[in-house]
Image (cartoon, rainbow, N blue to C red; front, side, top):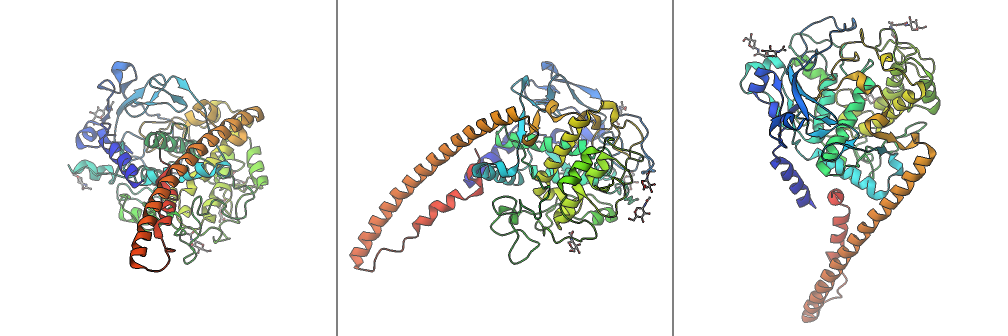
Length: 532
Ligand SMILES: *[C@@H]1O[C@H](CO)[C@@H](O)[C@H](O)[C@H]1NC(C)=O
Ligand SMILES: *[C@@H]1O[C@H](CO)[C@@H](O)[C@H](O)[C@H]1NC(C)=O
Ligand SMILES: *[C@@H]1O[C@H](CO)[C@@H](O)[C@H](O)[C@H]1NC(C)=O
Ligand SMILES: *[C@@H]1O[C@H](CO)[C@@H](O)[C@H](O)[C@H]1NC(C)=O
Ligand SMILES: *[C@@H]1O[C@H](CO)[C@@H](O)[C@H](O)[C@H]1NC(C)=O
């Protein structure tokens, strides 16, 4: 099984596509020219232009004014993303997407991206045992596979453009996303002169929901590519009214270590995961960027949080109240915003009154605090895979709000939001480029759905399909087990016969002890066992 993982791993490395900065643009020449229009390997032209997939174009960034929270200009590499790095990129046409237009837009599939298909994100507790194992093995594969397409940048632009040794580094597919979440939320210290705490390009303001929506979509996309499982969808954890971290079991995201309560149980694969980018105050103070170096194990101690910061997990009535707020964002559109759906869902508005600058954190933020560990710092939180289950559920609440209130696109703020959050701002640090306002639409338009939001008829049909698929999956699994069993039996029989001969020759004790039986167990509970 290890060998299989290695094969997948090397196959990825050998792929001709080089690609959070696409590999082809991760060099001094590309930086100097400020152009990132990689050649699509399908036709040898930049952006697949010859096949009509896209064109290499100047990037036009919006000149709408930002809010007053960030009184600087030209000191942070994320300002007017992506202009610090690139001013020409691929603009993909039709249903194509990607930095080189080699991929299909969210919700589209097939060789020319014309098949429209909806995937369903399901409650993690509704997944079969095999599906749960598959999910864990996908996570682990992503954690252990170098990203074939992207590298991270490990320096601020000034440092990078000065040295011919441009500062790029390989990371795993999983850690690429950890790094992106760190990068969008890191404090402003990029020019080494300022540490400005009041800035975050993906939190504390309107883009919080669209940004995390794109983050999860891209994550799904990368998992589909590395596993070849094009139907993969992130499951969610519905934490309403929960009293404890229900997903913190060895079967799912890892139980608690019996010896050290803030570590993951050694029976979970996540106990071996190492975190990156978990030391934000330190990077800012030193004027450096997180460079993806491992910084120790995942920490988590659910429920042992500081009660002054948050009470516990959110309740159904808090979710209902939040959904009843009809304004997406209000006033200063930051953590002070009153009666703002976004601010209340994010956790800075009181989930009973809707008043901003709440003394305790609620909703989304309360779960982060509750986990009391890696999840509790904004910049490091994506290291913990609970992040994905949590944000999938947050996104489903956003989706419910969009369906209930049916806002016009213009309801999303076009100007004066905190920097990075206006409708037309490009989300840092994504390449290809995505605009906040484009993700203020129903998930159905971008190809996915949540099982608990489906209408009952659809839920029934999907239920049958997934039952059949599970039965089919189970069948091949049983068949595999039977073959394995037969092989083991045969080996055992041979071994026993040998042993008996040996023993009878020696005239020794009974052949009771035979260690072979445990070897079949060893192969079935391996986490890599489910990778296709
Ligand atoms: C893009 O950047 C290059 C290199 O700095 C510069 O020469 C060019 O004028 C820029 N293009 C635009 C449209 O700003
Ligand atoms: C980059 O080069 C400029 C002058 O070319 C210099 O003033 C600056 O200190 C250098 N920055 C770094 C981080 O080396
Ligand atoms: C929010 O509401 C509180 C309580 O009514 C009020 O004191 C505060 O000024 C309001 N903030 C804004 C930004 O309107
Ligand atoms: C925000 O809340 C804190 C206490 O939680 C208070 O000290 C501060 O004055 C509030 N800020 C505003 C602008 O209301
Ligand atoms: C965990 O909770 C304790 C209080 O119960 C608090 O002192 C500590 O800072 C928390 N740690 C994290 C990482 O949230």
